[in-house]
Image (tube, rainbow, N blue to C red; front, side, top):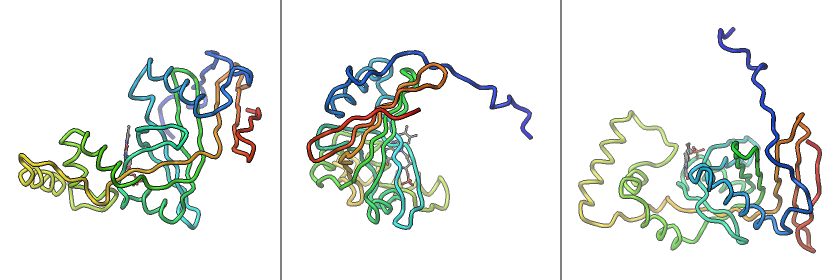
Length: 215
Ligand SMILES: Cc1cc2nc3c(=O)[nH]c(=O)nc-3n(C[C@H](O)[C@H](O)[C@H](O)COP(=O)(O)O)c2cc1C
């Protein structure tokens, strides 16, 4: 048994805000933008970190943090390595979920949808804006593959640093972006006594439909 604090004693009350259907935008992307901007004022970096949950084609789930780089009615985008575990899973099963936990606002947003790769030109454009060190790391690493040790990675990084001294570092072939095309959103607001507010938007032929669900 752990000698630390009994975890069942850790409790938090949620009372920051209320969520009324009538206050929400009809379009969930506009609603997301409003919440994301509120969060960005409090903490710009944490407003874009999100859990990306994928599943292999035989149904094994996996989740990790990635950074949201842009979003609009065409989808929610991030960049990564296509050869990573998430990349392989998305190749076999394009269904995924994005989850934002905005602790300071006592909010959670979940977005489900189908994922597709961004055009190569968009990856190249974004890659060219990244700091040189991040570009070198992306080129030095096939994400999620086994490496003999930290020194192997650092040698690869140094070798690329030497090779591209004054040159532009090309965007690796296996590096690129994804877009999740949303089909369902859930906006969660913490409330007293765990009687939380949860509003779900789902895409129907006639447009976005909203319902309240139980906590
Ligand atoms: C704050 C934070 C931001 C991250 N942003 C990204 C990102 O934008 N893209 C990415 O590929 N990995 C990002 N990572 C690393 C991923 O969480 C993960 O380790 C990596 O993508 C490999 O995941 P996979 O093996 O499941 O494919 C981030 C991690 C943290 C903690």
